[in-house]
Length: 149
Figure 1 (cartoon, rainbow, N blue to C red):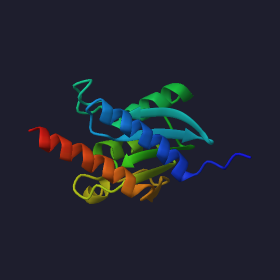
Figure 2: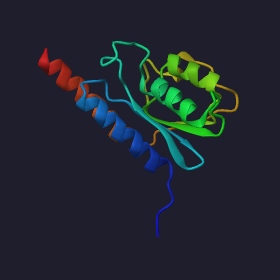
Figure 3: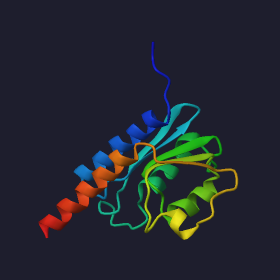
Figure 4: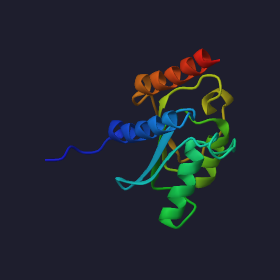
């Protein structure tokens, strides 16, 4: 019998995307968007690859999910992302009207909570899912970056 898919399961899928970003020398942040229990978008940071500061994992996922679902509103969807969204991504989530955001590691310096960025009033937030694991990957990336310089 299959185990039911929960927040930890979907965050692991986002983490897998973060590992793909790591392997591409991108800041290792991954995201998936789930609608009615099905992953409709998978994405990771592509800011270096695309030479685009807006190519965050969440932004890539929003575009992919909207394309897959055939509409710009993601009211019945959940965004799983390995790091707390920045204010740009949180602002974009407002416009998608996403139903829920689940994030792993907190970003106390650049996260939307620090800046008090307003989300859509109906968006629910869950934090800390696989936080330690997500945080360790980010730390590993930046330690390696510093040691190369």
